[in-house]
Length: 236
Image 1: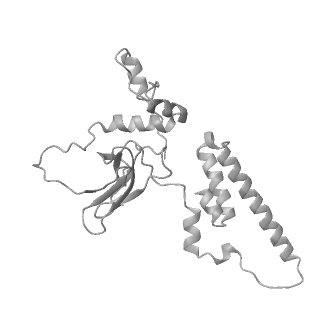
Image 2: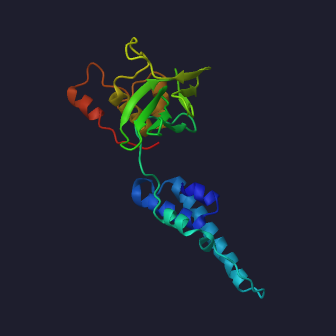
Image 3: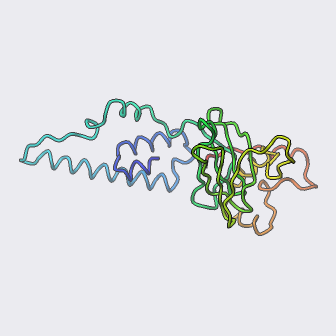
């Protein structure tokens, strides 16, 4: 968000947003991305202040409205009360492609849907952030999800050369093989991928067993299995 504000020339707001982010996530405060953005914002602020000083010293007198003066009161209040996010939805994985599309779903937008690198798409309750369903939507990756504006249809696409349409099925129909029953294990596996080193993920895809990325083997103990499941949740 701070980068977006900076690109939109909201330099002061970008600095406030970045400072708030550093306070909430101190482990990321000294990352290369944060340091680079911090330098860009401060350089832009310096250039802006220097330009304003030159205008003030000019012999030409004119009345200029500042950005804050031109912002309506209700918009200013929303900005002052804004945060990076209100809810966080965890469980999916996004490390392979640039973006995983997230969308509102349901007659009143009461659900959030998003794709994942494991070929599934996830459905959460918007208000509670609870994960309610995982469905296998692609053999590789689900990138895009679009709900129908008036009917209960959801279109998904990914690496497979097809677009899939999803709609509720009759309750008496046979079992849906695309439902991922063990949602907790799927979410934990994705969070391990998100926190893993990219080299480890590459080795895993090549067939190497990386501790913490795959389940404990037959020789592993129960203690190892239980500790393996404790994964720090990371937002995508």
